[in-house]
Image 1 (cartoon, helix red, strand yellow):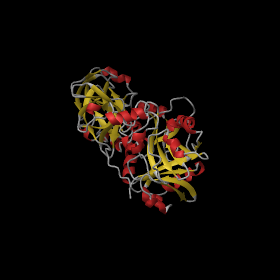
Image 2: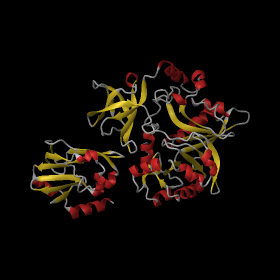
Image 3: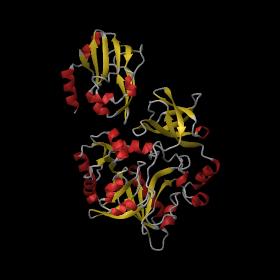
Length: 123
Length: 375
């Protein structure tokens, strides 16, 4: 299952683990990404909480947790190759994985078609 | 970068339509709609400028022409407003200086070029109307002051700029850094200086408003020239260690605190005669209480404007005034003011980013070596 937040994060759900990254629209808006700060394993975050930072040449932007949970893995490779966020935002450039606390929160997110419509409304 | 502080309608430079045509992402800047980037993106534009050649629209900056009124001393008049050595400017020479206030604070920084008959000033966009009023108030009894705010100003920067411009005006090749000349580019009478705001070799080309787009298109027709937006302009100047007015220098900083003593004329240090001279002279003699320094973070964390600078004990000793990622440096960089005791190169400090200290060292600037052509 793939879900999207209004803040342009995606979460791919397998079992009770969610893998989180930012969307292609988000990376386009950010421009060239030059630094990513991913969370420490074990960190507990609520839905909508600030959990990571992505810096483009222009500015720093917070990444929010699309659902609440506990971080179980972070993509350390991103600190060496932040450009992956521009090149492959939905794949290689995942930010972190978390154990989802309440899968009910997923229902408040958009599916792929819903997100595509949402983005169209922003352009 | 300085955004327009008011809700006044945004102005456009003569190149506005061309920016749109080239896919420029337009943003408000200093009262103008300006391109922050083109489809190439800030990183690509920055690296293209350092590697080949970039064309920047800087027509929003203020061009002002000063001419002596009969029997008056033009140089003496301007020197009453700036600490730079204007007397020593030979025709065709250009100099960097500042308009200072009575406290020695910086009202604006500017370039002054002597044509022999006139002095040509280039001032910051956000300050130009206040500068004009300030200059009028100070010297209009002695000097004809002609704002030329509608004119075009293009910056052609990078190692290939010399080859490109020489195709249209062969004399461009022989010009050296910080000199200017009237050059004809495809029939357009331009005033060209070998100068810029990137740390690269290059030129600034002043054109009549009506010919700015023509000259820009001509330069862009060369394969090695790409249009460059404000985003890369900022990262290029920061790598070059150059001050951005309103951020790294303002009315609360003196030229000495800002590390601009080199731009204060040798005789003028002794003789004074510019606004705030007493403050500046005292700081030259005794040292300034704080200094603008370069800061190189050890890791990859980017400290931006406003970040606090702390010493080993966590005590705040200064503030970052410009910070970002340097594409050519391939890492973060910053400049800011620190108390004098912490200003020596090699001093270990930390920059507070999102509540955490990121280790950094005071380093000499520029971050990326200047490649000016000095003959």
